[in-house]
Image: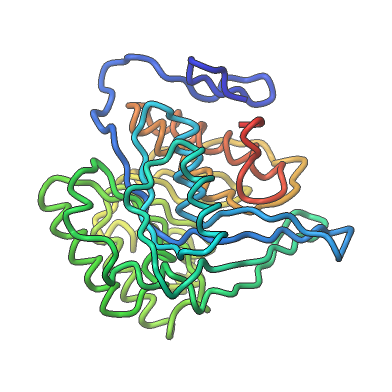
Amino acid sequence: MTLAGTGIIVVSGQIIWWRENRPGRHDMTSVLCIGEAMVEIALAPDRPDTAGLGFAGDTLNTAIYLKRTAPGLRVAYGTKLGRDGLSDRMIAMIEAEGLDTALIRRSETRVPGLYAINTDGNGERSFTYWRENSAARRLMEPPGLEESDLSGFDLVYLSAISLAILPPAGRARLMGWLRHYRDAGGRVAFDSNYRPALWSDQGTAQETVTDAWRLTDIGLPSLEDELALFGDPDEAALLERLRRYGLGEGVLKRGARGPLPLNGSPPLAIKPATGVVDSTAAGDSFNAGYLAAKLDGMDETESMQAGHGLALRVIGHRGAILPREER
């Protein structure tokens, strides 16, 4: 739970994160998250004819949890949706979460992507996607994002999915904008969520993600995705490759083994998770808790604790987004 007005998050009776005016606190007050917002169908495991309807997407999940965790932070979401009823409902939900929706563009001919979650008895999930006509795939085409839209933010957050859904020309345009944005003093956070079905081939994915890592200030890779994409022989080789890209800030997410800082600090000691219902958005919520604490001037251990504590709550709930009354 979050104690209203204090910024304190309590998990199993323990305070895992707090906000206060502390020396060294970062001056970042605005974050733009870019990606694809989708319609989520959560299939009930015990009733094949029953499903829950929601709205989610990897970077949208992070944006929502980031705003919930750090209410004073300006968090905007950049995507493209349609003119249909589901798009209207999705924007209403995003606004209700306190996110800035000024950079959500609308398509006259396309609709949101859709996915269904099927969860097994251990909380592990599998997905079925319908996103061929997703409006977000045309985010970089008029009416879409403009390079000037990035300049009003201290941090831009995106993932490999944000890049994978774009056609090659749009992907190259966004990467060019990020270079200019960083040259002007902006910072980039990146999560290399690897979904093979979204890429034309593995080589293109490797090249694109490598370029993205070289533009990244705060890295949020996961061990499973990086090994699957790049085929590193072991964790040590993976970390060395990331360091060659210039990554020295962020964490490697390792599932049940806990996060490992990219700066060489000790890993976070964690207890095995219990009561796992659905692992959807575990990494997305970790990213939000970690970034919120990081932007508030917390050290690596405190930031990892914040991310891990939030992820533990999320995986005890079915679907990507906790009900607002449980946040």
